[in-house]
Image (cartoon, rainbow, N blue to C red; front, side, top):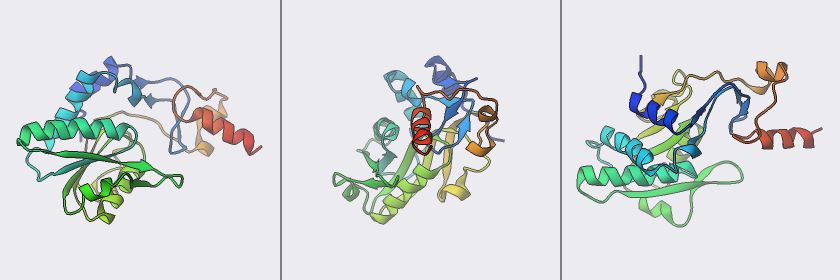
Length: 214
């Protein structure tokens, strides 16, 4: 059974990134009492650099030319990971990112697609809940003619379902945050009338859409 990297778990706790006993709505639309606030990690340069270094060490022996992450959090992570891979490999490793579109796809803009064509790519992501963003980034890399060597995330919320078979390429992660996650219709917190958190996650948008739909 996979064990979390304790150093990474400690960093998540130190930065206050792991929040529990509440009612959150994720980007995926699913509900949970727990939330990993990645935005609390990124201001701490030493910590995010260390996390990226751990990822880089995992792939130092892989033929990687470019690190790609989805906006927004994946941008910072991809840059630090590329930086540490460059130090380990003693060569320049590029870092580019995809951007989310109105249809929720992740595609290369700004001409960044040219940097992955014919290159070996590592895809990185901060928090994986459904794996959707990672798969979209992988598809964009393939469309641009790149080769995806592997994918890695800081946190995997659903290791039973989000794995190599689901992602489609070798996939690894640094920490599992054990969370109960439900579809809206199955959410016991909704049934109990527990207020939805509107400060973190997509709770505010969820309530606005709910109100608009009557």
